[in-house]
Amino acid sequence: MTTAQIISGKQVSDEIRQNLKTEVEGLAAQGCVPGLAVVLVGEDPASQVYVRNKAKACEDLGFYSEVHRLDADTSQEDLLALVHKLNGQTDINGILVQLPLPEHIEEKAVINAISPEKDVDGFHPVNVGNLVIGDDSLLPCTPAGVIELIKHTGIEMSGKHAVVIGRSNIVGKPVSLLLQRENATVTMCHSRTANMKELTRQADILVVAVGRANFVDASYIKPGAVVIDVGINRLETGKLAGDVDFESASTVSGPITPVPGGVGPMTITMLMKNTLLAAKRAHGLS
Image (cartoon, rainbow, N blue to C red; front, side, top):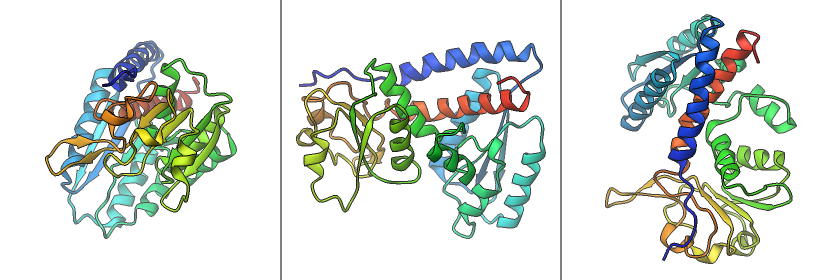
């Protein structure tokens, strides 16, 4: 039986968006309207849903938005030309090229082509480097959302032991750096970690991002620990499941995120926050 506090990503996301909306209204009076361009190459169904949700978020918050839908056989040269054009548009403050891209296009080349000041995904090497050394930068959206969710539990991260399972460039590595910024002591586990349960059972905060459905159960969790589940996996039944076995984990954990409805809603909200920040910087208002 679940006794844990459930962390609602939708509720936290709605609170942040309301604050963003108020700020956007104030900036409009100063002639600053945040602008986001989303580029979608091909017909990937999941990507199409994400792009629709991003366009709707822009509309709800009063952002200017452009969606560029390109054929799956679009050349890398043509895609880079579009990115270069968007880099030069003053009404566009954020550029997001939806991943994954078709196989014939090199993701790294596209990410590197986006101006760091407009890289609202936080993937450009300049922004990643600034994150590593602790300088100001546009933060990757999902990891930044994870930190916001932990903050909203009211639990102090400073001095706590945080364990991150997964070392991807998109979540695992950046979230470990952001946890260190909050003065947590961070241990990273991955597929080669020999004594994973021993480590995770020491965690005051456990962040799981491995892409394996129901990988973490109650036996991995220290009683009362905060558990953030970044995974989204579709089961054979068609249902969504996280990387954490929620039924089992929530019997021992402290605050825990569900899937869906946990980390997911935060990602687009943090993207909007990055776009607003980029717009303020472009107008000399930050």
